[in-house]
Structures are given as C-alpha cells and as structure tokens.
Amino acid sequence: MTSHNKLIQQAKQNQVEYLKKSSLYSKQLINTIYTLIKSNSSDNATTSSVIDKITTIHQLDHDIDIQLNELAKQFDGLDKCKRDLQVLISRCNEVLYSDGLYHEGLIDVLQRRVEGVDRELRILEHTVKIIKDH
Image (cartoon, rainbow, N blue to C red; front, side, top):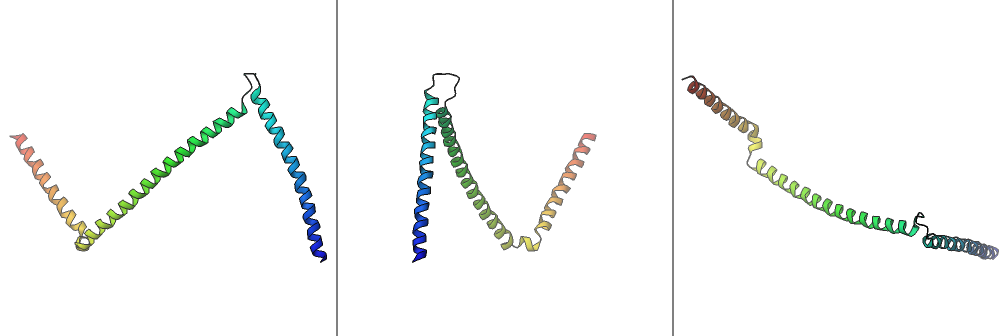
C-alpha cells in the first residue's frame, strides 16, 4: 500500500508542477499576443508588421504546396511513362528473341545490310567521278 500512496503523492506533485508551468506558458502567450497587437497597432511606417510577415509566410507556404503538388503530378506522369517504356522494351525483346534474330546473329544481319549500303555508295561515288571526268 505504501507504493500506492507514493504514486498518488508523486502524481499530485507532478500536477502542481504542470499547473505552475501552464500558468507560466499562459503568461508568456499573453505577453506575446500583447506585443503582436502593439506592434501591429503602431502608426510608425518604418515598423514592420509581424502579422504581415506571418501572412507572407502563409502565402509562401501555400505557393510551395501548390508547386509540390504539381511536381508530384509530374513525377507520377514520368513514372507512368517509365512503366510504359519498360513494357515497350519488353515487347521489343520478345519480338527479337521470338524471331530468332538475336540467336541467328542480328549483328551479322545488320552488318551485311550496312556493307551492302556501303558498296552501293562506293559504286555511286565512282559513277559520279566518271561522269565529272567526261
């Protein structure tokens, strides 16, 4: 039972401490609000308004939220494009592998085509040279 009494005593002491802190915080809040009101009530044009600054901060915060939301939408769009591109790449790989071009030597097929184009270009260049000479 003595530990129960100690707990009750400790709880009462904590409650008294919290009440004192609460009273102190209330006084600080009242002083802060009074200072804000006094600052904004000042007719001096050079005194900057604290409430105007707070309003500006809130407007900037709102603008930042809008920009972040737009960025999130753009990121989602980019992510969707990435997924679509991955699907297209997968389809292309399926076509390449299913036709056997990769296994039969896609590089060889392409190289033969390039060599043919190169040969035709050389013939064309030689023909142009002959025409210019005559």
